Length: 313
Image (cartoon, rainbow, N blue to C red; front, side, top):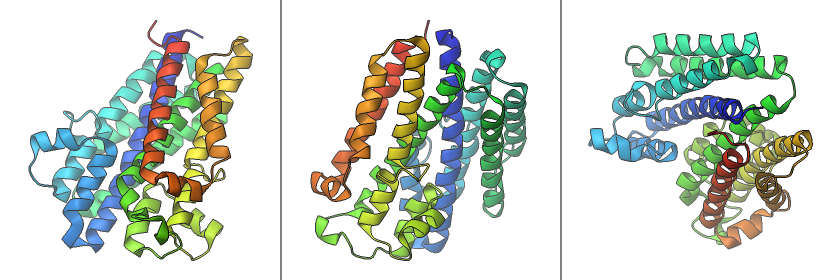
């Protein structure tokens, strides 16, 4: 496969995943802001920090109001992290690699772009926000479903999965990094109860509330939440699951091309680190430090994939 095509698939699915992640973050922030009006401003700033858009927002606004943050993250064309900006780039990449996609995947992607372009053509009022965010998630799910249901499990499919899981891991890690103060300040607090509203922010951001309780019952502790989102390989948005999927895709590419690249070695190392990880050891090391290390490793892996498979040639 040409590097340009591989890169188009990789980034198309990174951007699709990013748009859905931003919708999930907005949903969590909106619900928390409604229940805790006194701290709503800090919650909206937290959402912006997680998306990495706080600097761009501060350049345009001086307060963290729900209306302004929602508009900025959903439909501001000057914000490269807004859903409308991300979906445009995702669709542009899909056009670039259209011959590598099935008709169903292309049509689902094009329909998602047109639907969201129409939806976000005007400001979203707060009472309509849940439905709007639901539409964003639904459109992404349709593309994902078409991909899983119609694409050959070949090298092209592997690049779609690499884009998805590297982006998803980055998002989960950033949520934990922004919210880590809720899971600390000390290892002595492992096993203590957390405020329902606090932990709900973290679990809702990755759509993990029901899954968490299936695994852990009603007990909510810092250790259980961190373990679930970092090391639980049955959780599709955990760091361990994403690292496993990335490693498997790169192993397939290694066999397909009969060549082991540095990116495969990096993915194997990251996967092994999470596979054998222990949450108590992570807390002792420092949760913030562990997450920062993961973000660096994940970013390094993504850059190496681009280099090994010559995306820019």
